[in-house]
Figure 1 (cartoon, rainbow, N blue to C red):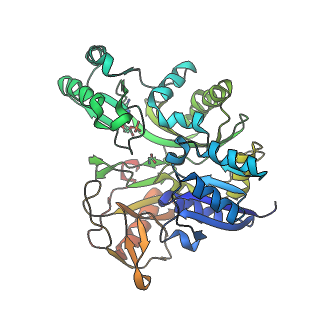
Figure 2 (cartoon, protein in one colour):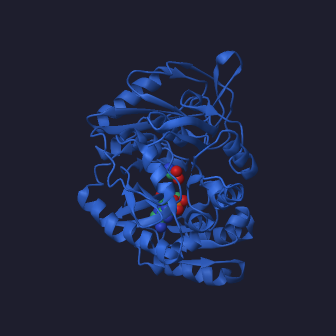
Figure 3 (spheres, rainbow, N blue to C red):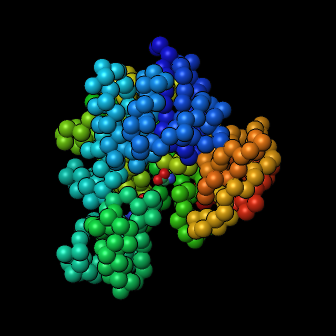
Length: 430
Ligand code: AMP
Ligand code: GLY
């Protein structure tokens, strides 16, 4: 394959991990990350632009002769970056490949109501549900009273991962329904999906598809969402990940393939949705069976940090083929080891926290790879914190225990004021 000039959009640990992986490709030409973080500048050139400013993204495409745009986060996708860039490129007679669905496909993440209807249409296993608006609050209250506690209420639209409430009492749930519909999450909660609570163990499965029904399944991972050890306290963007979780065995993954991946791709095709990019299946294993909790239209963070380290194949040609609608690679080679990512966060996160703390210690450890997330360069070459999730230490091991121990050793060699991380990533799987 000729070399490819790539623009990767995003700035989190996920994009750092994708950048790390892509930068190792012999097919990589010029490589830009926008806006990136203090760590991604090692893999390519950071460009200071906002991924939802499509004019600025397209100007960068032209200036740097970009062949492939990889969209890391969901916002630009839900806002229609594929359509915007494709349109501009067509007018200019420019060939531009994009990894990431159009607005139609991105609705799988952008609207929970759309996603639930979609699953219903294609018999994809998911929790029983109904959707309500301010006109149908009373029906909503009645529907809640037909369910058993706890009650799951979800804002229909994007709410930065905060739009899902799980409530123990019926009365509180009915109150929450009103508050949500009254605009608790702005327009995102103008519709609220109420669903049956499923109990089981969660995992994340990632599919890369080229719009023609061809697809690859990436190594599965488990995310740790709560701030506190033992899965307690507030939900976060994710505090660590394990790839692969042992319960995602061949038998389970075969069910995921047959009951979820294939019907999802067939559904997209039968609705004429030309989906080229990542599909993130947020799954729950109830008994031995997989159910879909949610779809996302991008990779997960911090799952990507452990998943990328376990992909042995060159990912860049695979992304080019995906974007071109011509996926020929039949399977990804996987590193046989286990990978464990542990996220270090700012003290106080996911509530208010301080930024601009100096990060000191060993940022290039032997035992692990460090992926920056909320970091930026300070004056005089220092690295400063600039977000809640600051960086992830990812390590390989022969077991989860071994990989986790290496990540912990690495984090012990790092410091910033208020630094916090969970010390139990992977423990539940031992
Ligand atoms: P979501 O944003 O849809 O992934 O929901 C956030 C989290 O809420 C999920 O990761 C689950 O832990 C939990 N959750 C969502 N829906 C359900 C459900 N129907 N049953 C049990 N837990 C759920
Ligand atoms: N780790 C969950 C997410 O990226 O949405």
